[in-house]
Image 1 (cartoon, one colour):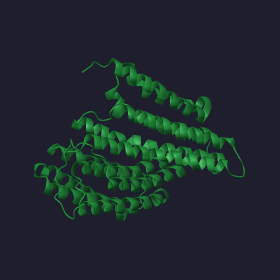
Image 2 (cartoon, rainbow, N blue to C red; image 1 turned 30 degrees about the horizontal axis):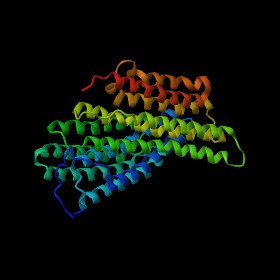
Image 3 (cartoon, rainbow, N blue to C red; image 1 turned 90 degrees about the horizontal axis):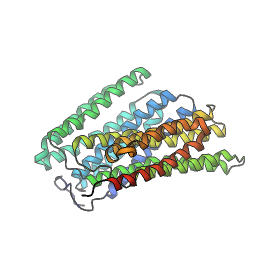
Image 4 (cartoon, helix red, strand yellow; image 1 turned 135 degrees about the vertical axis):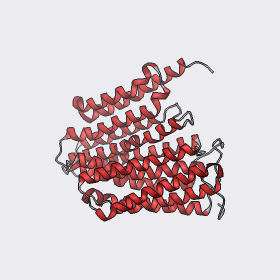
Length: 386
């Protein structure tokens, strides 16, 4: 690390590009915020406030994911690892921790104040990073300045909401949806002025690491189930929950980390679809863990919702994960009968709780891995040789 370096563009074909220790620390902070959002969803579902809980989870998760994604793509293109880059990254981390602290009051009172403060801190640090990129990369100066200006203007929108907190749920939904649209528009506008030199393999690795992070929420729920099973009043259902959580987590991991490359091209439309399309995948991965936590509450008597509702708290996000994975990868990479494997199994996952409960969901997910692997191999054999 040097105290101060120009923030020049990185080589998008740089060999052996891997995640840096700073990026891994950034992910560690991100997982704390994701865990807070998943905990909020868990408690809302257990209290039978599913619709409100799902929306608030989506709102909190968007703030976490969007800040993570924007930083990740910018760092892939411009990370120079000097002191200012490190310090601004740490400011983004501080904002993420503030967002995590604001999630509980958001779920409890509809107040966005703490979330907005943390989010604006993250985003203003990004403005400074983009201004540095504009100075260090004259070729893409307009792109970087569009990012900086766009992000700054959207933050004025968020700050303007603070005096009106807390908002009624209907207004909350409206202002969040508008804010999301404004945020999503910034990269689409900026990249039209010149594509930033992000590194394809580096981006795929970064997304893979966040996938592992969100799947860790389910493993935490499995541990909670085993803790209850080891308590004074043994209940075999806790063991079933833990085993099912393990099987489903491993299946979700296996399906994501298949032999096919996730992002085989640097085409901008494909990159946008892939990058944005991961949002429901990441959210669903974390929500599966929340669903298992709900099941632990049901069996332990801390929730009065039905066991079937708890099973669907796992099945629905698992199905969304499969559909999102199909959207970002399989619809491009697999042809013929293989093309539809994940959508078919998503439908089967949704039917499974009606047949044999949680164990059926785990069995269907395991079968999906087997069928998807066989289909992938047949697809590879049928591809024409180069």
